[in-house]
Length: 204
Image 1 (cartoon, rainbow, N blue to C red):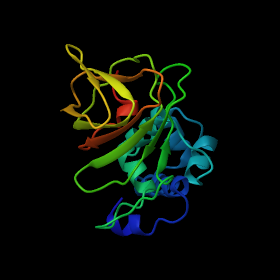
Image 2 (image 1 turned 45 degrees about the vertical axis):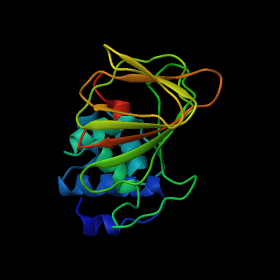
Image 3 (image 1 turned 120 degrees about the vertical axis):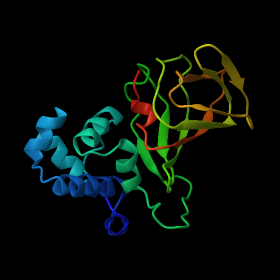
């Protein structure tokens, strides 16, 4: 979606995401039924997504993005108001990211913060799972900053225990996973760069 079209998006983040999906679908001259066939999702659900009435999981968003020749990050970025040269995001704002399919019983939350040029996608995670899930791999790079709590990062052949104020950078195509440690709440800022699959739906 070009910048002029993105600037016309209005409504809540969920509605703006739906408008982005609809715009890309129209550009590819697909009906909802055809998009449903490409994604394996029902056309009624896709209609709700386009109208801002349903929030797809990251795995569903991945299917939609693939069918539309886009990425999850691009669809999520369409829901944010990060197109301007200078953008401000207030506390409690941002686009909630469904965290299903990470670890059974997960109670953590994530939200997409501002997006920017060059594939700049910061995401905040609050309440990390205490057990490791499976490894993730994807394009681009990741940068982690620990704002609260203690976090253990497993990069396959080495692990790091990070405390508040610590940060870590690594290539996204290196197997990685992280978990919260101790009794307190954990809060992590992850900056994902590059036109890659969003880490919550990366190849496992």
